[in-house]
Image (tube, rainbow, N blue to C red; front, side, top):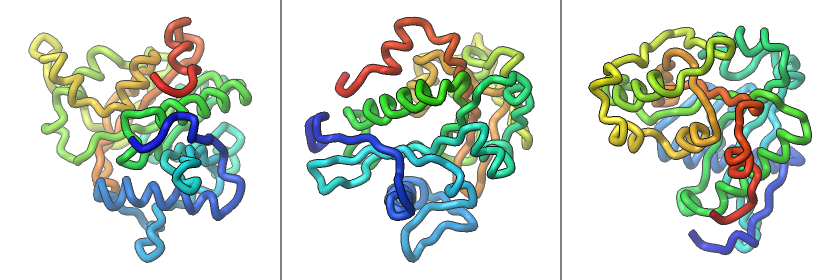
Length: 253
């Protein structure tokens, strides 16, 4: 971790050049590091992109002490933007009927990543603070989006997937379901080593769980992206005061 938290700035991409900066970081993480690919990925220019990018807002964290380099990104899609795009991104993987039927203000989150040198430090908290400000400004009520485990073998992920199913399943009114259904109930709860299973859950997913996030029913195996995806759902009304404090605090914990 190179710099103090005061050297960070959070902003929405204001033009196509800024979006390309976000796409380059996404390429470094999702394509080069994790082995993903996609129909519109530009390997020559090192851009991880898809047809939804023009409709999303792109939240970025810059390190001002490192030439304004983009070191963290998030994609954000509101209801109105999804209408313009024809769907939410994650509708290819999950049936979002319960969320749409709620008639509440939705925000889809995706493509969250940090430069390797900035993981586990204040850059992530700045990204969360920027997200919290966005949620408050647009009066968002439900946040959701796919989050990923690396790899496409559900058996290798049986413990963490089972823990999510048994302990963190979304309430029925918000329980989205995977379209190409991969059962997550792979190990009986009584047989789970819960501590070991939690250690196998990616840090971003654990952060959502600490904020009161829940998961949809079933996983989706994404062979193109070399991931096994779950759908996280967070109802802002269910966050208690302590969770809200974690969510909206700034900088360095």
